Length: 291
Image 1 (cartoon, rainbow, N blue to C red):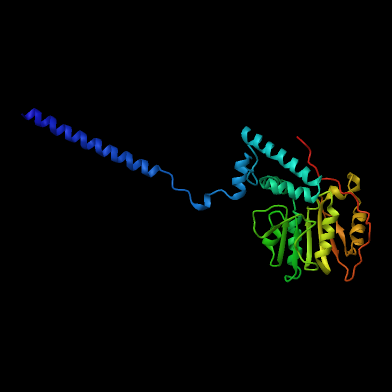
Image 2 (spheres, rainbow, N blue to C red):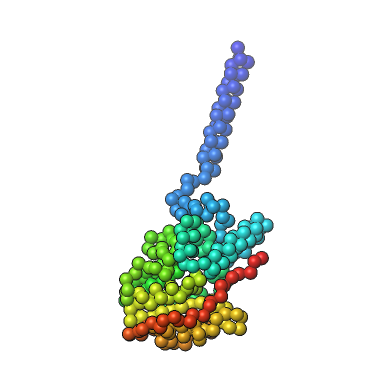
């Protein structure tokens, strides 16, 4: 009888040790379980569209691709950006509007590539324009044609109408820039920051003239190569003369101190009469080399 009792007691000890081990494993597993995702971890609407389209994620700012897979993805994204960039430069505003309206996810791809290009510029023209606005009247109403991520509206106290082809931001007016819903003579400043891209760019400037008040300001920033005769670009004096005939005397000489872009400041006449059949210089497309 004694050996049987000893065996039974040993069995109970083994079961207790086994139960404790299982409880310890369960507790360890519970500690290792990942926390539930917070709502802030959910992908944004542009991110959802990018994933659905199978696009590579944009490279974080300031970091270069290291692995072969990252380099391949960066190359693919860069190629897609160049294709969309060429599309914008070589079609009319209405064609671009229709194109991106039917495929809005492509506009996100374009802007991701655009931001990557801008990150390499030592100075961004939009920042120069923002600082100019901050140094002037904060009660002025602004129209930002081709606003992109609406940086102007986010950084000044002025009322800003942000206008672009497509946007997830409800504050941005999505339309062809040659035909905006703004009222005539309703804004004090019109901005084109690297956005005179369509083949019918003069119609964008005519629309700006329509919505600008008398004595309103027209600010234009353009890629330097488009307005450099030495590299096949248009003559900046002829470009300025064409805009002057639209009703804007050349108030301040264009700033060509920056090696990346040219900045123009025009002021609208109090009473202006538009010259018919303006001889607009051709602005060559700003195309990136294929790699």
